[in-house]
Length: 442
Image (tube, rainbow, N blue to C red):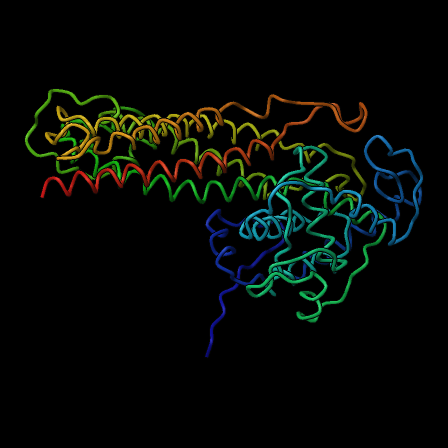
């Protein structure tokens, strides 16, 4: 008998961060009926209040056009999505889109989003059937919610427009829906805005980056240990007691991951900083990764849309403003510049005969040995340092003067993803030089 593992979502219950790996791997989602009921209740409050007073997004224009009276029709909701679906750049990785859809479900599971339960169920059905919309990476400012990428995704899931990755092939969204037994689902007044006016996209990018980065830090430390051994390290720099000197968990975790390098007999009193300070440099970044995960957890466990229903009334908020995510992404990018620097310096040390006891630049009967690999390391490190410049400070007004500050969260997060890509190259480069050094030692 086939046993299917399910990710269960319960009303106001926040899952552990590790759940996201299960979502990426394709586990199915089971949403408790009480969540759908709570959304239907919020929807009734929303409609009742909208019949008595103006409510943003209910048959209105949006942004600085909020005073414009719109149509109260499903076609108006379709136009809301269509006119927001203007993203640019390459398509987001499918795993990011999976995480986005799941996080949108998590945020709605707080019960404050005034959408019908059937609207949320469509996202769940899409995930469980493996429908992954193709969504442009760029377009959101992380304020007014992640409007643009969300609109692309939901045009696909509700109206069958655009393309999706479905069972390993790129097909029309309409074909993906019908092949899964799903019909076009028209949205009712106010629902389009509620679906797109939130931080789910930004949060997904941060979650995805932290999953990648945790794995990369472990890999880099494995490579660093090999470098230490080639460089005839001084073992006392990595003794477990080092972790007790400072009250930073990251340092202790690095020492655990690094283990005890096989340094051999000491050849130096003290190693260069790029060898000696690995626990302190990596430990600081690992602590910031933990902090970033805590920020992401608070975000995906929160309601981030506008307007919301709270205490049986409609409340207009600014909960979509993703500055927490922008700031932590920029901070991590700075940390990665430090990791890049220490890797580049280790690569340089691997080429020094004084440090390794091997030929200079590992050049044995060759013109330059691995000298030119250091040029590549220098270029990659320079790029990561450039990407460490924060995006979140570049606030610009949009939508007239109504949306007059923006956190640029998605730009910070796209930049962070690029930094991770380049750091992966640096780690591989260091490892390749180690292999050449080991070949010379044989």
